Image 1: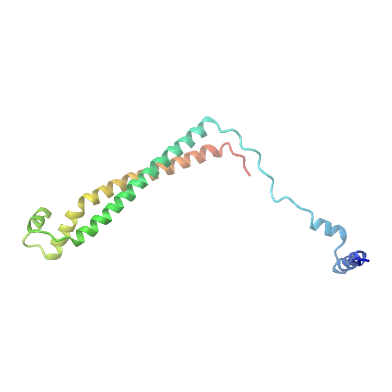
Image 2: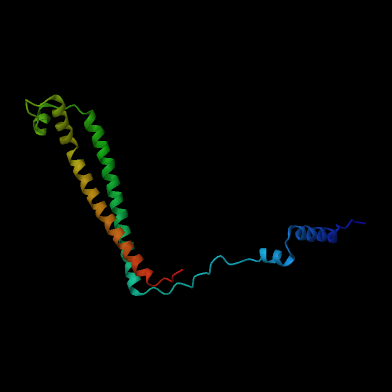
Length: 158
């Protein structure tokens, strides 16, 4: 023979504790009734041609930005390698003349000219890649803002 749990005793004890706390069964049911936090938004409407073209523009601008980022990273890597190479290089009198060192220049000033002359082409490529990357970033930002503005008119307000 199995022992039965005193279910009625537990129920009676629970009701007594609720009554002692001043909570009625009706209040208890209200407490545990799920209340919706917010109403779900309706389905998004089909995007008109303006929003689709803005999305296409954003996508194209992102692709341009991504390729500009890759070129900038490559130029940055090249500039770092060239910088390390130029710092370790030993320059000749011909290199000093090509860099524009004068007989009146200090060693520090001539070293700066030699380093600038050595790194110059890689630095120019990095600056050009940075300009293209900056332009692509600005274009992407404008395209995203345009897309958000056009899509905002169609999306329901929450």
